Amino acid sequence: MRADYEALKPCRANYVPLTPLSFLARAAAVFPDDDAVIYGSYRATWRQVQARIHALADSLRARGIGLGDTVSVICPNIPQMFECHYAVPLAGAVLHSINTRLEADTIAYMLGHADSKLVLCDSAFAPLLRAALALLGRDIPVVDIIDDQAGQGPGFGGDDYEALVAAGNAGFAGVPVEDEWQAIALNYTSGTSGRPKGVVYHHRGAYLMALGTAAGWSLPQRPTYMSIVPMFHCNGWNHPWAMPIMGARMVFVRDTTAVKMYEAIRAHKVTHFGAAPIILQMLADAPKDVKGGFDHVVNAFTAGAPPPAAVLEKMRALGFEVMHVYGLTETYGHVTQCIAREDWADLPAEQQAEMAARQGVGFPMLEAVDVVDRETGAPVPEDGETQGEIVMRGNVVMSGYYKDAAATGAAFKDGWFWSGDAAVKFPGGQVKIRDRLKDVIISGGENISSVEVEGVLFRHPAVALAAVVAMEDAKWGEVPCAFVELREGASATEAEIIAFCRERLAGFKCPKAVRFEELPKTSTGKIQKFQLRARLSA
Image (cartoon, rainbow, N blue to C red; front, side):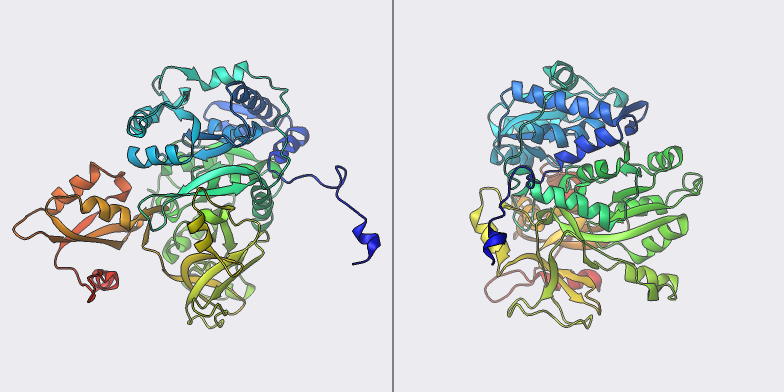
């Protein structure tokens, strides 16, 4: 390289570490008096939201929260949860959003593994958090989030979220992000093991994910976004960090029923939202007197499981333009998108829906995505038949697994992140998942580890062997089905097994059906799950 070019160095004038926190400052400056947050009767402008966030960040610092500390939040999609996505990293800390659907044992494990220093808890989940803290065996300070519009109880009865906001300095500038590789969030995913793994996001990735989402979704200025994707799922697919870019109005719906969502769409002219296929099905199958009543196009992202083509067809007929996207917790959420091609327009509606169910091509913020042969690493041909594994590379791939170097090394190989999902490629590079290499069941957008469920089944005194596989379900897409081999002389009923699981697992993880039979095994005693799947489809 010429010396003249090498002499040009980064300085404060031409280099600033990337962080999505800058989007908040811009929104407050460009759209100061425009609505930012709508939740029932509550309204707040971008200027007001910024002031609340900076005040909360200042109060967190006053409580001793510092650089790299983990702050856990257990809260549904309400304005306070959105504020935490900025206030926690503004204090220099790392946001850990907890899945509200998990059981106490898993939450206890997460709090301990994440080294949580503080928990902000919506009072509706206070009993769950109390049980988790009891299992953890140590106290963690808790701040109550009281949602007056939901009529929630007093929570832990100690520090209060609104009191922290009131006590903080709205002029607090925040802790400067000196290194864009600095962690911004910690999210947990079950994968194939019984215990979840901590996935670390950095500021650079979150910044680029937000910008890429705005570009890939073709977000207009001032969209009206309905917050449906749980913010404990990949930080709401990073949408909380993307919406300020375009000065969005964000509509929050605590209870995601079809009635509530359609009411919000009509009342606020919602233009965009993201949701798992189960939510789309809920909207499509709502009673006639509930759905409809709007004359504008509503754009939706859907991910979490391949959406049934029939659901996509129904949604389009109702006035929804649905784009199928794909990603993992390890990729900050969606990193591929199914972009409709012009030549699809002449196809029958059913065939168009089939095409739209593909995982598609990479978003602008993803450097590369491919389907490769697992043995050779060579790309598979674009024939729609040859199966390989989806691999990805780019700035929106996680930093790694928290405190798990072995798992990080296994995920990163030959310059790629290996997804564990088996897929094929069509002409033009369109990707479509054929099967999952991991034994993960995706039910209504929730990942369920079959190993975890099997571990519970094995604790039943009548169970000798157990295997859990995915069973098709019209409502949830997939649900767990347990195959159980009983001990000699023992007896149990389906209802007893399911009840046993319900005492030890979150409801969505429990088997919805139990089959009692001898399990197929290899010569070494390994259970042949492919045969069990075949039995379900027979």
